[in-house]
Image 1 (cartoon, helix red, strand yellow):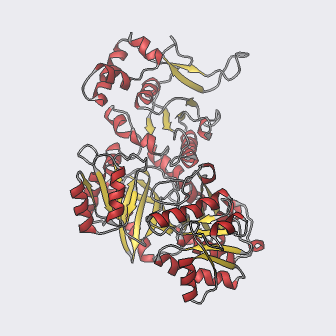
Image 2 (cartoon, helix red, strand yellow):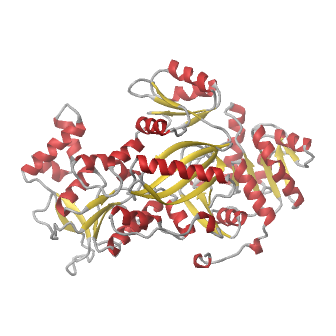
Length: 592
């Protein structure tokens, strides 16, 4: 009966849940050990890639309980290394982690080990027949990884190059006596667990935004009074499907909590201090036995509050203090030592007035690691893999201060395919791709990247709806540059009045819900606007409705849209300073 259940497709986890009443994560081990004693194990079969016309010798493999013998033999010589891939492409995990997986496999091969990849996504390069010695087209679950590990008996398993899915398996593999190569899973857990990581930061004297995990509405309101608004709120479960939200007043907080399930000990809410107008800075790094080995520091164009996967990233950083760089390196060194890191890691920081706070630390490759590796021309994943394999590795001699070019990574969105979705950036990731470009100057790199993701240099008319006062102030110089460049500015009423106060000419357009002419929607639908800059103001129903209508209309009519003031300023500076004919077209090898 157990064999029949496995043939039918029931996992150990599902069987444990059906049979036992205790802790499923413990009971599944009982099921696993019982079936192994009964010799109920999966068999490895080759995928027939030759349609049964010739004997298939490809390394495409899968596991099945319907067989009675293996199609391959196993060496049991500890000369193989398993690399866990990234799984399905989705928002938050895409080709960046596949690049990391492939580079790890290449290094494993170069060092004379047999490379074994576990991944189930045929879109990836890591699942190509000529990339690894053995490819298991199978799920990245604990049960399946353990089945393959037991059969292959490898030197070890690399979990840190495939993103969050393999990283989540680290502790369970460690508890099953699997040799996880590189950073210890205990350290990975100390960084992943919010409470443990926060205690570590406090112990090291490293600053972090204030936060609490709260289990009642009274506690949430009490913390909001203590810290003040805005706040970042992350419920354990939200009916609307959103994971995080920034709230700027008590009304917004109440509105957001009504969307959440009952706040309780079972469903706590994490409430964090949200620091406005702070720069977000990242460090992608490799450490060896707790010592910082190589690093790359990059900055986001947008202020903190935009998910790192949706932010426009610049490397090397161009607009941060040298002291900030020095302090970030110091914190990275402290955490490398405290967590005894051996391999890749990524940290995110908030910086305001040279005050540095740590947001998070991931002891794995990040989605920006391929980008900084290519700009720096130093392969961080190759270095990390050699360190994890405990083989000699040469320390890079090039630092971020010796690079004569600048890289810019811009996100690609698919809002046009998502009917009625609001195309605005926030703390949840929305982008479905990205483009990395290299330029000789900051603005050339930004212009190349933004043109590459679908923006166009506007011909004549630009619509401004610049939202809150700080965004209006930030856009003043940009608006002046556009006028000097010969552009016509159209603006919603509040922005028009502010521009007028600052001596900048614009044409006042009525809101979409106003029965007045000239109207924003008329100008958009008639093709008179070449670029829309719409900065969200607040969550009042009037602002929400009108701003959403403008943004959604721009997307539906294929008009370039920017919803962030800092990104808008950078793009405007770029189009005003650089003529299209002056953009240099060079191959990657030409940048030294």
